Image (cartoon, rainbow, N blue to C red; front, side, top):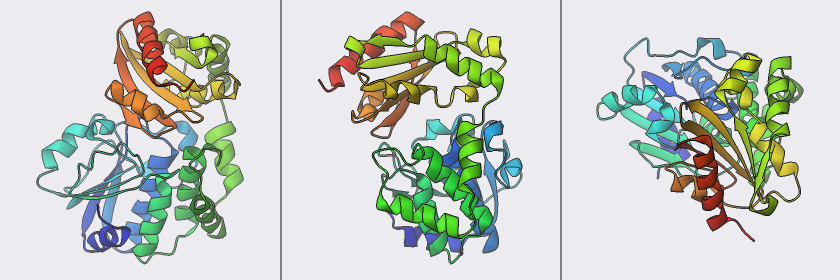
Length: 320
């Protein structure tokens, strides 16, 4: 694996780059991309940020997010992947990456233990937010974070750490957050826009999903189901499901919380959360991955088949 300093020296020599973010973008992949893109611009590296879909409205407060593109507008010298653990996490941009991976310089900066090290240059280390790595990289580039960079970085720190509540939050997490605050980041705005602010429709969806929580394994496993019919009923998109999976961990008996969202006919996006159980191991059984306490995968079959497979598999791993 490369060091942050080695990655910085590589980036300093570039003339142009595209920054690739993962499908269903969250605050960490966007914060990583927007802050790094700003830093590269400040040292004269032409760049643009790509994502496979329009950015969720809750991140519209971030400066520069309106410039994120669905596809490239120029032929860049390098592809930089931030918070992306595997090629398939690029979604529709996966084909774009694959067609160029052997022709372009590729760099990955990530914090998932399941990262496959599929780029030429990789910096991968587990921590609460990839923005911790990006902050160090920006300093190594010789850039002092301005308010715009700081706001993007702190958004990643706040959202991927669960408001600094996850077990992997460290001293470094807080020190990075403090540096962002000194540079002008507004934590109150980030917390409200990314976490607390909800449309009535999203609040209604959340209430519906939570009301119909299903429990398995003597209450140790809780599952929230979000069907396409529910999204249509409340007039919301898939991004409105953000945060539903976290709710059940507040139930004292629950060790693993799962949200399954119907993505297509007999195709479900599955999100895992836990307080201490390594759910990335469970996700890997189904071809997914992620963090120790937060992971995901895709499952296929009817809703009941998916629930049965989840309950059985979790029962093989869950701590008594």
